[in-house]
Length: 303
Length: 254
Ligand SMILES: Cc1cc2nc3c(=O)[nH]c(=O)nc-3n(C[C@H](O)[C@H](O)[C@H](O)COP(=O)(O)OP(=O)(O)OC[C@H]3O[C@@H](n4cnc5c(N)ncnc54)[C@H](O)[C@@H]3O)c2cc1C
Ligand SMILES: Cc1cc2nc3c(=O)[nH]c(=O)nc-3n(C[C@H](O)[C@H](O)[C@H](O)COP(=O)(O)O)c2cc1C
Ligand code: FES
Image 1 (cartoon, rainbow over the protein chains, first blue to last red):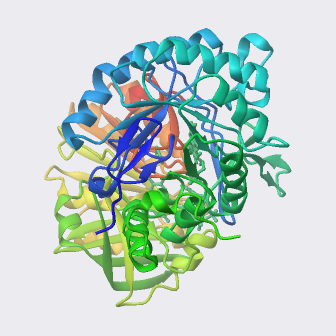
Image 2: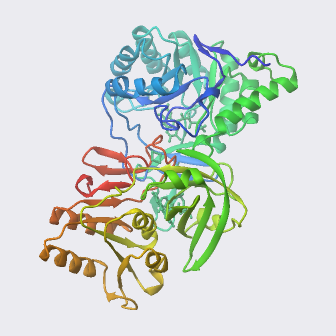
Image 3: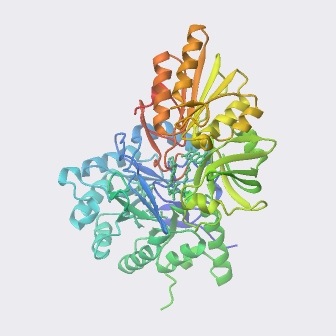
């Protein structure tokens, strides 16, 4: 039996496979279609203090190898989540850890959301790919200085394991990795969606009402593997890797590049069994290649 | 809701680009409420292709039927499914029609919008009339199947090739006027193009009767997890796949 336990910056997971934020709702929607016993954690949809309406429709376009979405982080707000959604999730799924994905329009809001969630969930993942409304709409994750500021503020607000989910569209991931490390992050999540656009050539208009969105799915996988590889070489922080995982092979690549755990996102939409297939396949891979623990696979890339 | 591999029992081309796809699922056939839908993984498409949602036309005797129109690459690929082939289906999904009605049920459909109305007609015990519209006679789908259920049919076509000439709201308005003069109760149920849905919702509100409107919005997950399939309602941005597809006329914001 392969030991499938991992410890992701203080978050103990009985399986190295999680779900990616925004692709698994608040964890309750897929009950009946997904085998929850194979899940190490679920990552809840992005939460901020107040409810948020999201973008106008259409909000997505299917493209070869994936999906471009501009959902716009529609959500119910933390108070409703803690009062209604989370207790319902707990009552249905037992002990599965919850990683709460958070965002905000200001540094103060990030800290406030984290404070509200402290002790209520098992870990916090900061989505820093959203605009800093107070600082002219520039995204938090596109400037190492602002990134340090917001990560430090959240660090001061919570004792929970703190993950920072980095944006892939930067010239080098290293300064961002360092900023997280120096500001007290416990782990990194890589990658968020890649900025993208789809145009309807008949109407000559953007397909998404928001004009642009983020690419996810099969197509982003090699980009994500490279970023995990770069990040792992720059830091000792554990990495939760995601981006285009459809099968165990995709997940193994991430482990070899330096991931300590993986998250399945877009694949679940087409195949809700993807998470359990990835779990079973990872265990089988370790068995076949003589790894007694999934932890031994992290960074086991041959040069 | 379950996700399962289902065996294809029938797959019939009925002309005009429409087909019936019948698959075996005793679990879904029993659990299915009219107005609910299934989310189908099209076998020939690549692993990253999204599922396609279809209303359930019929659910009886362990079989589930959808009536679909070939419009793009997903439905074109679905054409290739052969009897005996396995198709992965998620369902039953969404919030369906209420299966009770005070007075006469007026079912109003256009195009493949008649699909959920057929299962509704099968399950509704009250008197019911189907109002069906289309451009020509060939757009009026499944008339034989509705007749089999003993449903009275009133049709309208733009070119007058079948039923009244013009929009389906002509026979509908006539029936509403008649029921009102007789002082009889009725309710409206509809699925079809947005213009038709709005026309029916307006009539439900104007007459102070229940209006049950089935919306068709582009979907990703089909289970409420992604927030792609938004319809504006009095509650804000509602998810069509879980809070709908059937909404009450007074809840919709157009
Ligand atoms: C609740 C619901 C019930 C439906 N019931 C039926 C039915 O009973 N019979 C039937 O023929 N069709 C039905 N549809 C529409 C059907 O899902 C689309 O025609 C189909 O997805 C088109 O796929 P395609 O690949 O052929 O088209 P493409 O245009 O190539 O599709 C590209 C993308 O757009 C999405 N899409 C395109 N058109 C629609 C649409 N109208 N609604 C939702 N998504 C769309 C597809 O899922 C896909 O992601 C229903 C849709 C919904 C939401
Ligand atoms: C519909 C959709 C919604 C998403 N919402 C969020 C979100 O709220 N917060 C976040 O940090 N990432 C969000 N993401 C990004 C995913 O969590 C993930 O990082 C990305 O999709 C790459 O993984 P994948 O290719 O397996 O989907 C979303 C992705 C999709 C497709
Ligand atoms: S399709 Fe995902 S929420 Fe409706």
